[in-house]
Image (cartoon, rainbow, N blue to C red):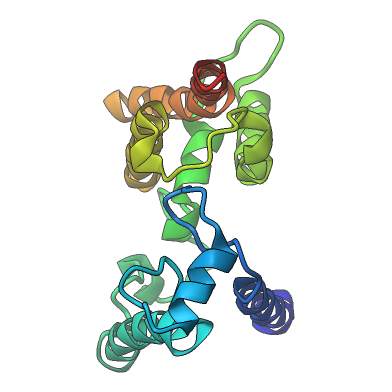
Length: 223
C-alpha cells in the first residue's frame, strides 16, 4: 500500500509543486548570478531575446523537461519490455526452499550502501557492541541527507563547479557511495570487511566533519 499507492501520489504532488515554483520569478538561476529579473524580462518582451538572461516558462523552460522525460522513457520502456530482469539478482530465480538459507543475504541494489554501513563496523568499541554501532550508523545514514542545510554552513550561492572545496567533497562522497554499494553485495570477510569499515567511516566523516569545515571556510572567505 505504501510504495504502490501512497508514495506515487506523494511524488506526483511534489512534481506539481516543483512545476508551480518554477513559475515564481528569481528561482531559475543556476550560476548564482545577481540578475535584475524585471529588467531582463523587459528586454525579452521587447524582442531582445539574445541579450536577455530570462526565458519564458513555456515553451522555453518546460520543453527542456519534456525532452529529458522523453529520453528517460525511451530507455525505461526498452528495459521494461525487453530486459525486465536486468537489475534482478540471479538468486531471485532459485526455487524457494524453506529448509535452506542463502549463504549471503543482502538487500536490493539501492539499499546496498546503507547495508554496508550497517555491517561495516565489525568489532566492538569499548562497551558498544559492533551490531549496535552499525545499527546507529545505518539509522543516521538513512536520514543524514535530510540535514544537509545543517552541514552546509556557507552563504555562497553558486553551482558546485564554482565552489572548489565543495566540488571535491561532492565527488568524494559519490565515490564513497559507489564503493559502499559495490562492497555491500560482497561477503564481509577479510579485505572486504576493512574496505567496508573505512568506507562507512568515510561517509560519516565526509558529512559530519569535512562538509561543515569546507562551508565554514567558504563563509569566512566570502566576508
